[in-house]
Length: 313
Ligand code: CP
Figure 1 (tube, rainbow, N blue to C red):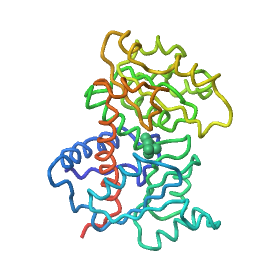
Figure 2 (figure 1 turned 90 degrees about the vertical axis):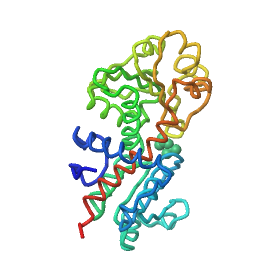
Figure 3 (figure 1 turned 30 degrees about the vertical axis):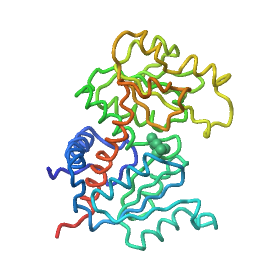
Figure 4 (figure 1 turned 135 degrees about the vertical axis):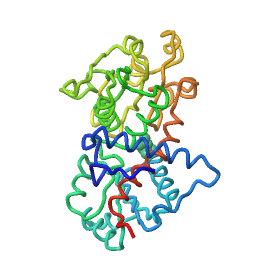
């Protein structure tokens, strides 16, 4: 493995990375992907590192993928669940994290419902921070594993047409994907009811199409997003039936475009709403490849950030 370094000491968002960082993460992930497909999947590389996983919001994929990545690298890990912690007794986030760091923890992985929490933490503690999703803001590891999975299909994303469909307004996955896909030279189009598109999003260099049947004909790959009802305090469309009729991906729509496209979904899926089961489970779907690649990509990120804090013996 090469000894290049990331330009950053934390992974707070895609917007803080440059193209050399992204290429380094992908090259390192290639190495780890090959490694975790061997019979012995574990390396002793990070046995001197302790990582705390702080999840203040529910997670299946991200939490388990980070844990597995850390275990494959032989790091020591502790898991914190907000609902069973002294946060419930009124302790602040900073106090909580400073107490965890006092136990000689080297790295924090944090998921939090409030945008900016990972940035805030990185400015107030003396430790490496990885953002595992901060509210509606960024989900950098998801975007990296999405782009890594697309590169396995297309090799190069330069001038590829990538469509992102659904609840863009509440999606940290969408924002991180936009930043990264644009950096990699892809053409990005968003498709949703206008009410689910943030104002001024086109200033990020993406286009918008409200007609899904038209937009899907344009794309090489489509990333279908879940409607995040838990982040909504009002209705953004008349009913779920209208939404699924206009923006749901089903087999007859897929067949109607008469060519193969790649289908992504960050999960969790609402089967029968944004995507039907026959499409989610079809040969065109790379949803489980995304999950598999997530471990290698997260191993790469943890390894590269840890290599900046480990003092060589
Ligand atoms: N894609 C994703 O972040 O899934 P989880 O919420 O299950 O971690």
